[in-house]
Image (cartoon, rainbow, N blue to C red):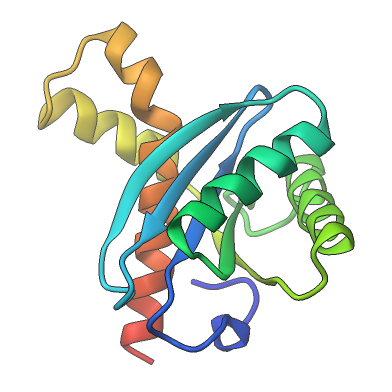
Length: 153
């Protein structure tokens, strides 16, 4: 279920990225130009915000992405806590650097758990390999949910 209306994203035929914001990393996924499929792209190791933003903008530029879907870690009871505030602050800070960006939020409850289960059950990945891919896979999970909603509205 979207937290904010996804209709503010730029017109179709341009990719958008999905972000899974963690304490130490940012998982990044990207859609195809038809916005049908989300694919894991990269994991950015967080340092300071300006460096993180530069790395994200470089990834977006390389893919021609024009919008962002940020995973919003809503509590299981639907309330927003400190992690949601942090995600919203990250988005606000991105907009200060690039006011033309379109950013939407997507309820990411259970995304990391679902992705971990998939990586264990279906991909049969070791714990070390899962740690390498879980953040960008969670970003793809988040972005895919938003893409499905966009397609079915």
